[in-house]
Amino acid sequence: MARHDDGADEYNKLEAMEVIKKYQKRNDIAHNNKLSLCCSLAIAHLSTPEQLKHDQKDMNVVLNQLLQLTMEAATKEDFTCKGVLYHVSHLVAVLAKLFVVDERTVDYVMAHAETEPPSNMFSTFKLFADLLIAFSSLITSTDPLNQFACIALYNIIWSISFQSEYQEELKRNIQLIDTVKKLAMDERSQMCDQYKPRALQSIKKAADGILYNLHVDTKLHTSKSKRAPIHRSRSSEQKDINGEDMYV
Image (cartoon, rainbow, N blue to C red; front, top):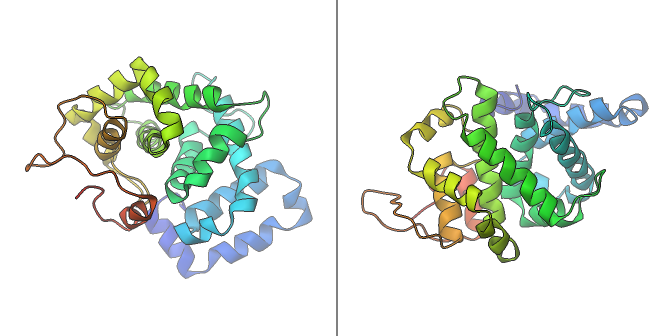
């Protein structure tokens, strides 16, 4: 329930996050990776952007686990981790929210996360790119998990595209760019936006933002007035989380 904005709002009214944090500190829970991760994911869903920013040190451990499990899920036919039974959508949804909140999170996951086998910028970039391409082909799926994964992955790549050190690597992946172009102009992408968390942008806006940040030549129009999207700062993105439009 915490994955849905309405559910998170109700839990926060009951101050559930403090209860979860206390529960997570119990010795039996702290030494149980599955239950501890479940608590961390719930906390991430219930937290505001500011709360997440102030919890960066503890979040690095969670980021390591999220990337590790995403790597595992990506190798499965049903995109589900067998040990903890998390679908990849559950994992990338939290990563997408954390990426939007703080660009330091993007840098940590791309270049410093601790996984087995070890990951690096190139392997992590390929992981997200391959997943985005795979789920873009599932936009007409009636499975909400596939739709949710697609939204999250477009937001992840969009967040990465803001950072200059990763832009050339993104542009080199022709299949990724072609996929983003096609979906940006495909009205069917709106089918995936039936449920979109407040922290994330729609696929259309994320796709347009990716192409704009990478200066990709494409005939995209983001509004009836045909004005180009404006490259926004991370502080501006914080406003977008509260429901304002990404573009001016």
